[in-house]
Length: 374
View (cartoon, rainbow, N blue to C red):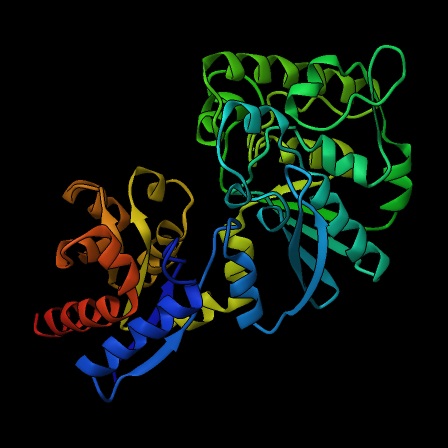
């Protein structure tokens, strides 16, 4: 009996990873009615992580928090075996704002801190913070403020919220946060390696996606430099050049400095919870995918993580995506032996998004039939 493992990430704007796995499974069943199918939806620590955790048995906690531009948002986090998994984007995601220069300077992470605080109140002994998809570039200052830290100017007054206000920051008071987290382990889940500052830093790389123009990028990068120094004044290590500290608009830097967080691979962490490694043992085929297969997919994203696990086991990889922007050489580097893009089989991008599930089912069936016929 053919054993097929289905391990996609989300198709952003169309399907969660769980929904994508279900659609692909239907296609595999169409092509191989007698196959043993194992679904293991995955995530890389970005948006959609909570959906995957819920499918793995996590309990979802919902609450209202302060959004990235003050309007309240309905947020949630997941709890599994005493660990609270907090997705930053649920509190300060880019989807809650209209990107603009004002947004880029004003968006903050206070709501992320509220989620962490709620988890602590309810007894979490370990916190995992995922940091992708944020609207903010505040270095996690808002998050730390919500947990009791002082973010202060040269006169000892609070500087306010938003990355732009950090141009006035001079010092931090981190003792209240450290006392609150005593005995609690914290990890930042990300596969982004960008530092906090510089041409590859949080402001330069991610700021434009949030509405920052050249002048805002320059202001935010300088403000984050002041923030890194202010954290050191508060007794934290220098986070300015730590790989991954720039993730989530620098919220990773705030977590490392203020919460004592370690940086872990988002994909590896989530994959360990969903049983991908066990599922791949003895598999004949694995099917992965995500909304867009591109150069970023080669650097820590879920499809690359699945391919890295399949390769030493000799398991061939098929890939499905909304669009594929890798050439044959790029796909070969991923170890992909067959691929299909939904956009190539739809009259428009909107049609592909609206009919993603049925397109995934059809493309999966065709790919599997082609693979089985070899």
